[in-house]
Image 1: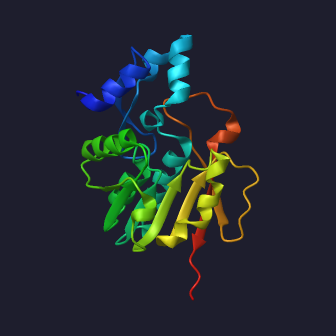
Image 2: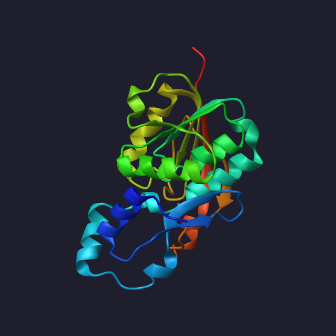
Image 3: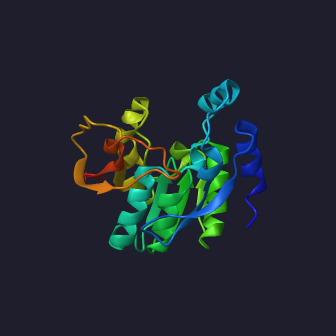
Length: 220
């Protein structure tokens, strides 16, 4: 299977011998175009390191929080069945694709990065589903039943977004493995899920424990 040309070119510009390959996700029926771990078992050159840090190809990974949320939706389809859903900071699109598979009426993958949206398109095609696409969350109407958020809070500068998700949707599900002192009066932790990032980055065990938080807009 030939990788998407634009995404492969973008990845090759960062890491010369890196390849995108279709990878089945454990515990799901999904596959994603991901960075081939077999080609990455080496030390990066200083120039490669600089490029990766400057423009990380996060869309070529399935992060633990996204995988955990995808599994959760498959096991609990009532969260999305028949609903309009927006996948915020979609990355590879794994959560949104899982929502479609679980019966969502509509799913919009939303990401600022054009390469991430291209990755969502390629992965939607790989899994035989259709997504909508948006590059601007705040340009979207307040029309969604549920906002999905996976692995967005790794940058603490994004924490104020927790106050914004319910401006576009009635409920939000937030999956995160990074914030240890998560405290927000409008969000309650539902449970802790086990997952890992693919390709495996040998992350510390605590990053494989994904907390799932829920918030619902209060009636006026």
